[in-house]
Image (tube, rainbow over all chains, first blue to last red; front, side, top):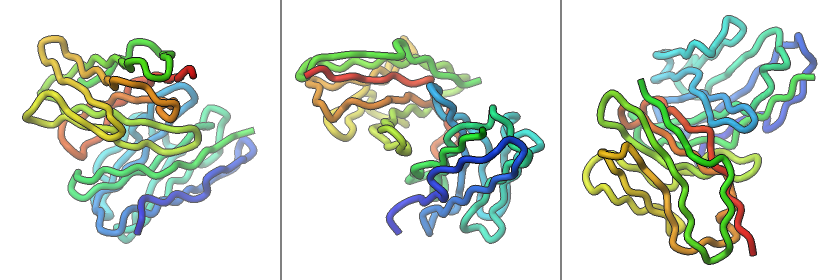
Length: 112
Length: 113
């Protein structure tokens, strides 16, 4: 396992469609984080999991966003009824009890 | 509340010149501080971090940063810029190691040959 994997790398979708992204953390890492990065800005925290439990959610995570980590391994982030403002890079990171915090390469979402 | 301010959204230096990227933080408790680098269409790579102990922290690729509590600063420096240093740099703060990060808006570094 060489790092945090995110799929897809790029996604173009029409406004109003639903999209789902996947993150595979480093295998022994128990914590998983999602961030959103818009153009010209730093990443903003969305949510994080410890094993399968979602422990914290940002106010940025509107009702259209949902994240899961059903077996405490990979995670999915779903956006329903996408809007143009959702266009961003979605970054995943993982750590082992907060150590070895590692980011993936991100999924770039473009809503047209 | 925690926040980070990066002064200068764009910095240009000549190859071989000193790199200085500024970061000031605000934190209600002793912070953990980080510098990350991001190349185009890539994720974030950790350059260095301060948690406790020595206030001068050395990182990868010749970068270092000094935690100055009295100035609430954590500026990033490198004595001699290389073309490969051209990238976006982010300063970040967290309350505890492994907690969520609060990132600055980033500084784009251009290295002029």
